[in-house]
Image 1 (tube, helix red, strand yellow):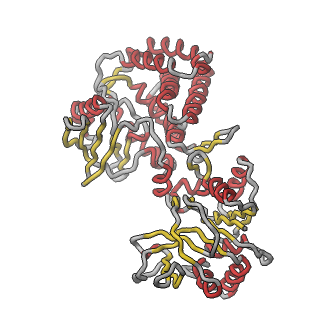
Image 2 (cartoon, helix red, strand yellow):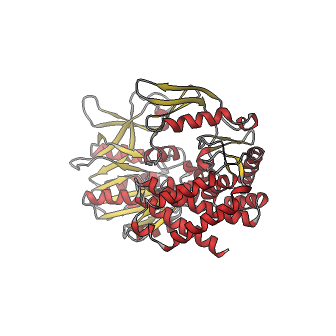
Image 3 (cartoon, one colour):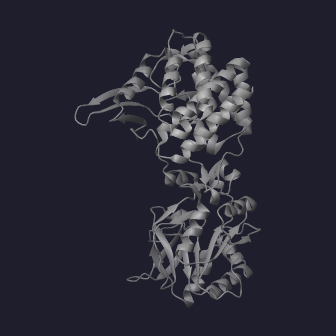
Length: 511
């Protein structure tokens, strides 16, 4: 049997991420989608796997080599549609059966190959799909309707898996389609060839469970990345967000208190707070707040926009917020508590890491530097001022913050360190599991962020001295070290956090 994976698309629906990477090599459960698909075909005994590439073909081939996969690579030089991509992968001498799985889906069911079939899923909106209708009383295909304008009286849409026993017949039908220039919306669609093939060999409709990665939204939803903060529950309804917790009721109370106790000029950077509730029945604690209709800085940074103009504007907005924070100062021992927390977390590290000489040197240096800086950094503090907790409103050119630590006063350096671990040291990539791993290597999908890093460095230099920036780097190293025990759900995250800690501390020591 021949296996074909058409994966030549540009991923335009993946926003900036699609420009930087072919969507077929994006990570899912630690491996690229394409590797999962090849392994799926191999699990069905298919050894003749052919991958159709176009956009960023060289990068995709590098990924294949990392995993020791050697499918036949076919280049689709012209983006002329799915039918054309399949034609590129077939040969007029082919006589075997052929299984085709689109490059942006992962089948979840085992397949049998007793007869020709195409997969479908039930959809409510017919206008965006190629709809399939069967002959009454059977599972046999009667007609296809490619993105119809009128209701085709069926809810079955092609979902991306095609099996044909006669690859030679499929090849000839597509060749006729191309020779006659039979296009739909300027492309050669597979529906045209399927209709003709069906006249000679009846095709069945089969419902097959899939995971669809066709858009950025679907990709993110299907990845379902686990979180170290899974003790929170978020519910969105009627332009409101309710945040609750059974295990961390005090944390919810602390956040609610912070939002309500900060000065009025800080509240302008916060969502409106509506109500607080302690449920005696299920022992949960919750608060309700306004929903912010804007992207988080994490979403912008990872997926949407890494341009110099946008991030210069964002850091200018952050600048205004921090100016407000720094107007309010009360003496506190926050950084001493950070040192104590870091030491406590170090004691929870694996033995080989805990005894690492770098860790011991860092801890001594951290204690010494905190004692030197603790009197100069008093400030009102958000406390978890990282990209995932900051929204940016492009219309108002203003940030909004959520999920504060709960402690109203603390350290301005801690705020900068939280920003630094997002902007410079790949925290959001690791936390979002935007990486792939093999036995020997981990590749983080962090291309294209140089302008953001430059904008952040310029922002930091405008607010702090070089000695202060160096100290912030030390605090930033402590963040990565402290996070390791919190990510017991993911050993790869822990390894990357430890490596990042050592990298930052090495940079600090060499300055």
